[in-house]
Image 1 (cartoon, helix red, strand yellow):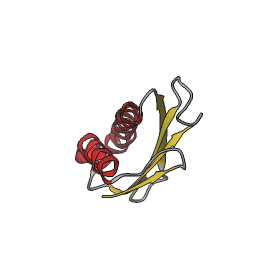
Image 2 (cartoon, one colour):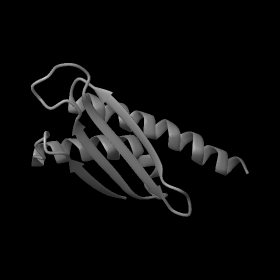
Image 3 (cartoon, one colour):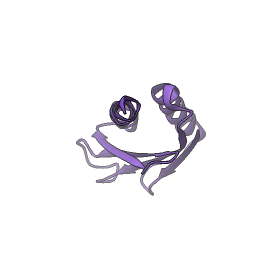
Length: 104
């Protein structure tokens, strides 16, 4: 499973942020690693950093072998919270989608 992380101009794409994000994605999706070819993570600050509020956004798209890509988004006050929220949503979505396939 390859993990690709992209940031907008308002979020600094540091090595630490990359490593933390990869760790969260790998931990949440480890049971699906055989079916996932790539996960794309897009981090953005909707209002730029000088304004407050829940404006950090994380969009994740998982590309699965033989299936259409699955995408989720989450918004939070911090990038870390948005990453965790999106990873949780993606895990639940994959559990549901892949569970239905195994029922057939």
